[in-house]
Amino acid sequence: MPQQALAEIQQSQPSNRFIPVPKWKDYHPEWPTEGGLRHLIFHKDSNGFASAFKKVGRIILIDEQEFFNCIDRKNQGGK
Figure 1 (cartoon, helix red, strand yellow):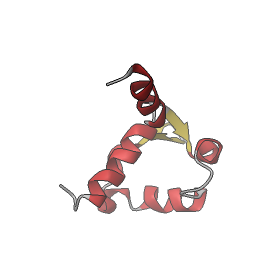
Figure 2 (spheres, one colour):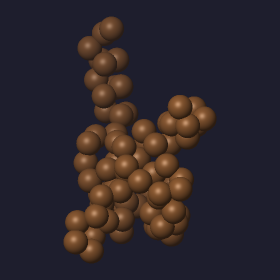
Figure 3 (tube, helix red, strand yellow):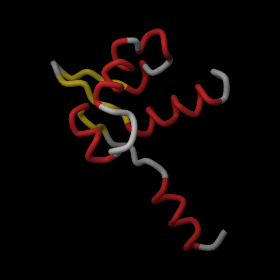
């Protein structure tokens, strides 16, 4: 695989960063909204997103890479 193509793929993939809920829109302004995220957080134990959210004190952080992994698993039928 050419180096340029590999670099483009790596840039398009989410990094392993933790984003506070109110800052999510700075990285992903389109979807989900803050309210949508809070809904996913509230129902995390029943919707398959529990692994994407980490609580540190009163702050909830979103593991960006795991969030998109959860979406991929949901799109594959939960496999």
